[in-house]
Structures are given as structure tokens and as C-alpha cells.
Image 1 (tube, helix red, strand yellow):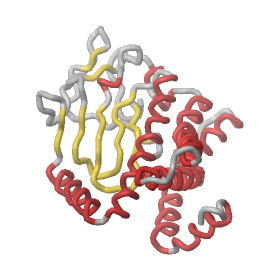
Image 2 (cartoon, rainbow, N blue to C red; image 1 turned 180 degrees about the vertical axis):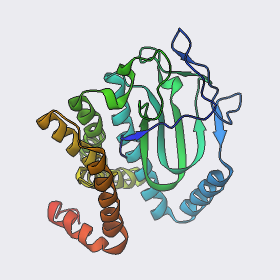
Image 3 (cartoon, rainbow, N blue to C red; image 1 turned 135 degrees about the vertical axis):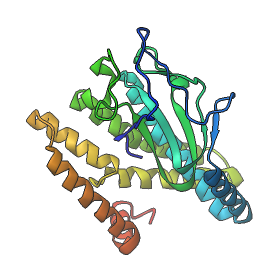
Image 4 (tube, rainbow, N blue to C red; image 1 turned 120 degrees about the vertical axis):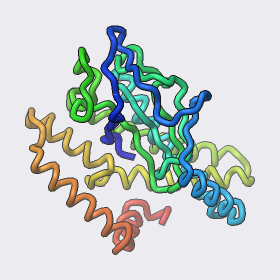
Length: 269
């Protein structure tokens, strides 16, 4: 869910030509633009089959997928607004099926469109990510620094990171309005679960723990206030501490997280 996930290019990357076009075919892409990961496809099929035989679980997975997609589209839309080059948008982890309309990549922001972005559906329902082009991982010849996410002003990066949370809040409001208009039906079960998960994801992503959006927002706020980025040494420690805290909250002591959500949203927990 964090937009601070940057694209790592293939080793076969070639330099950009004068038109700003990256002459690099997508890896393992068929003529229709689809890429399939064998392990991911098998796991995704198992997830679908299990969801069909366990409707309650299926509703949760579908609602989560809707929220993650909208969350990542928030990052994507904000990134496009600030002329970032977006390499990949992934819903869930462990890639299963990817689609990229354009078999070549454009690194020029004015030419980069949704066709240059790889859209991926994963098999592990644990969030997603939006990957931006980053000058620390790839710097094609004759490139303009304006195309790299890490070269954008801190306030722009802060908006891009916060856009996913904003989209979840908007989803919550829209679902709430719909539930007060529609009569009770099977579809309202999905809408209700989508509303519930939307506010949960919004609250969770505000937490300042890497790799959640809150961590990137905090570092951007620091940069806006001080005029400089946190040191590399600090960021390494910050990321390790964040991952440790995430593991603790989600796997070792989830009751602490539940109590936090209960105190913030007593009517929902």
C-alpha cells in the first residue's frame, strides 16, 4: 500500500532513444500483453476456489481487493498529476497475472501513460503497492530528473503518499451513503464489508511504520520542516524498526492493534 516502492529494472535494460522511448520489451510478456507466474496462478486459483466454497471469506477477499485497488489508484492518480513515471500497480502480493498494453516502456513523463504501467493481480491478500521510477535504481541516459519520484519536492511526495489514504476515506463515505439508500440485499453485504475495511485500511496506513504510507508521510513532513531529507543511516534503522513493529502488531500481539482500532472506532469494533 505504500507508494514508496520503486521499480528495479531488468539487467537487460537499454538506454533511452532521443524520443524518450525505452527500448526494453517487458519480461515474459505474450503478444496480448499478459504475463503469467505459474506459482502465483496456482495460488490465485486456490484462493478463488476457497472463496467460492466459503462465501463469508469470499466477501472479505473481494471487499479487500476493491479497497486495495482504489487505494493504489489514489497513489497512481496523484503520481500522474505530478508527472511521475509509474512502473507497476499491484493488487495483492505474489504476482499471478500481469497486464501491460505497451510492450515498450516510456521514461518520458509526458509520454508515459497507463499503457506503460504494468498492472498486476497477486495471490496473497496482504495489500499492494504502486512502483514509481526512482533515480537510485535506474538513471537512463539523457533523462530528466523530473521523472523520478525521489527528485520530486517533499510536499508532492507527501500528497502522493496520502492519496491512498484519502481514497480509502472517500470509499468509506460513498459506501456509507449507498447503504443508507439501498434496501438490504446480497450486494449490500459486500458494500458494508468494503466500507468497514476502507476505514480500517485508512487508519492502519496512517501509522508511521515502514512500509505503511504513514512512514513516508512522516519523512516528507520532516523534509518540509527542515529542508533536508533524513540521512541514509537513519532511514535504514527506521525501516528495520518499522518492519519489526509491524510483525509485532500483526502476528505477535494483534490484540494491541485491535484495541487501538476499538478506541478509535468504537462503533465498528
